[in-house]
Amino acid sequence: MQSLTFKNIVTGQEFPNGVAPYAMAYAGHQFGNWAGQLGDGRAINLFEMLQHDQRWALQLKGAGPTPYSRSGDGLAVLRSSIREHLCSEAMHHLGIPTTRSLSLSLSGDQVLRDMLYDGNAAHEKGAIVCRVAPSFIRFGNFEWAAAQGNPEYLKQLTDYTIKTFYSHITTTGKEAYLQFFKEVTARTLDTIIHWQRVGFVHGVMNTDNMSILGITIDYGPYGWLEPYDHGWTPNTTDRQNKRYRYGAQPEIGLWNLLQLANALYELINDGPALEEILNDYKANYQSQYLRMMKSKLGLQTSQENDQELIATLEHHLQLHETDMTLFFRELSLVEPQMDADKAFVTISMAFYDLENISEPHQWSWLEWLERYLKRLQLEQDALGMDGIAFAKAKQQQMNAINPKYVLRNYIAQLVIDDADKGDYTLLNEVYKMLQRPYDEQPEFDKWYDLRPDWARNKVGCSMLSCSS
Image 1 (cartoon, rainbow, N blue to C red):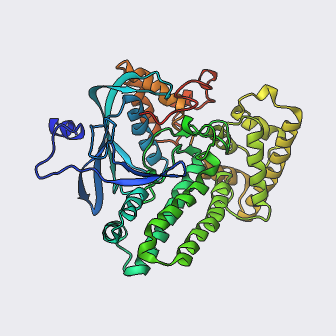
Image 2 (image 1 turned 30 degrees about the vertical axis):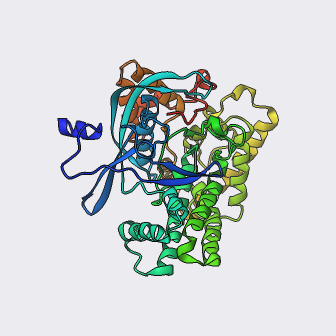
Image 3 (image 1 turned 180 degrees about the vertical axis):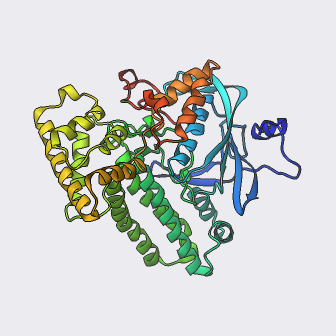
């Protein structure tokens, strides 16, 4: 990977013999509205390769214009490229289906961008990310094919996708297409459940940003929940309507799947069958979300009031600014034999303004913690474990799904600020930290803390635009 040939390939300066780079046409719905044909505006597919029976597609983002760039230059800036590079790798190590970043390179370009869309455009360093995935086919490719008025386009694309990426589907015709849609739906739901688990907010869940393989793609104005808030979105473009807020992501996933169903309808011609699959998404989300939240609380067995316990917790988390990552990580230290006061002290570092929590809010927390402690005792009894063994097993279980380290926006911005000055020390440090997000890694403890006050309203830390 240090060879000159490799460097030339991942920066778009050289192509292997016999390789013909291409861009894919796709359309989509943006913020709920049909936007027609959109891209690939700056993604150039290099080639696909097979390794150990796994297909990998290599794609350059920011290497220049494509036939679908419209008025754009096809370039990308260092700022957004660092964010994509770090986040795609962070998501992989969190166990979330995602594209990967093979390389991050400076392009040598000075790229003109209006970062906040406020009329103050400025030149920024250009960069190229070589990203890797089994495929970059997205919902929008099917929407584009369906909009062409030629059913053969849609059939060819769907048949190719099934044959190449869903080859275990052995039926044909309508049944194959229904099974394909059902599996895309399941994969999409699985990924969104993971997003909710770690507090990831994609920021721009347009249909053209939805992978047909159910992986996370297109890291733009994303963010991670710091104060737990179902209404939070990192995207300045979405500030007013908050369509893509954290709490709406499962619903938006369903809406996007409906658009995919509409695109596939001509091949299936069975509305009730498609509707049944979409209804299954709703039911499956409820059960999978409950299971996920219980696992975040260290609960393996089921009790009648588990759903209410979780709903009450989510309400309390939003009453007073509470850091999601810190809260669940510290909650792993709470043991059944504790009293509520000690449990409250245990989780107290997760509160952004501990000194000003009102007495009623503190009492409500103590009440919830009392219920949680009783629930942990029921869990311990059901598993037939002694207190020490249960506490150890619970902490291990919770720490395996509640990360200690996530790519907080302010951390990414600090990396960007240094990299813009030519210093990549922090980039390498954060990259290393994100490779083991569930481990203690005491050498990185400085990053296990509340978002600093200076980052609360700082550009690039609290809100981001789609400018990249």
